[in-house]
Length: 462
Image 1 (spheres, one colour):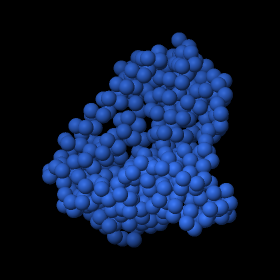
Image 2 (cartoon, rainbow, N blue to C red; image 1 turned 90 degrees about the vertical axis):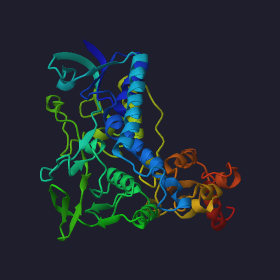
Image 3 (cartoon, one colour; image 1 turned 60 degrees about the horizontal axis):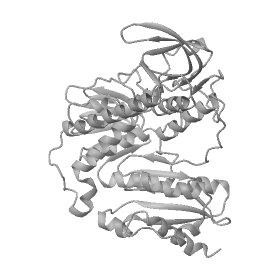
């Protein structure tokens, strides 16, 4: 059978491309090799880690410790069963919603491994070995990524884990070493730290989260250290050993870190191995990433597109969805307006980090004269009511145009609050928006007015 659009993978970019294509009246097939629809985002990435985070924060009483002290807990003995129960309920719901969405839009789905045979033909092989071939006018590679697993790291599912395996723990670790301080590494490190597990975070580079405003990162690191996490920056790992009772991480400088479990979270690789890309002349880099046109998401083969984590940075579920939609529209000749220049990043660590627009380092490098406004959550009435004693909002304004250039948040609710800054930046708003508008009181969002006034006091009326 021939299809107008073959989508390989059912994660955020794949599902959005499939539904968009179907809404344009096209015949769509989604092929996914996983046990269930949803891709990495639903089963091992975005949704599970965020569900785990929410469960930990609720059961540990983390959010109330500002009032009741660091020893406060909602549930005294938290087990892995407590965490997994909520996880499975959430995942079942996500899959159900996705299946209904495909059914409503007449998107056909199949559980199979796809292999390209040519620019308009592919084979499908099911788990039971059934083989078939289909034709397609357009295809989208949305296969996502898997954890990078170097051969010299002894992954055993008992002492040494990758980030996918952390969702299958049989018990909570009594101590944990996390190798790699990227987004996944810091999220898991801080989640387990919120459970009062002693955590050591190891990163070979001297800095972490380089795409985030430095002041935000510095505060984040301070908060992690303040609650007892050990952070080893500039420390490369020379060896990981797994023993019967504990694991050891040997650093290049000779120091040894001993813990019950190790999470290796240093990078991910694209799931392109089985696609047969050589048959169509598409090349992937050493980490399995596919290069695309950044505006259309076409690969070097014009009718084959790629989107989501498999094309690399920013590797966010939110941007992946939009990439899938844009690719589908381009494939069928639908002209879209140019996308906004800025989109928010969310890091679901404890505390959350979210950022939109330019960092202070980027503004300074551009030569733009600017002013900064800051509001600390503990100084807001809502923050005080909630017992929030850390976190802040930082706004950057152009002195010449008075426009908002960037908004950066570390602390409770950061990933929700950032959208106010996003809207103001993308609509060309100025500092006067924050000064002249009324915000609900008491709210954390009121921090925008406080930060705006903080900058306005130094900028003047303009």
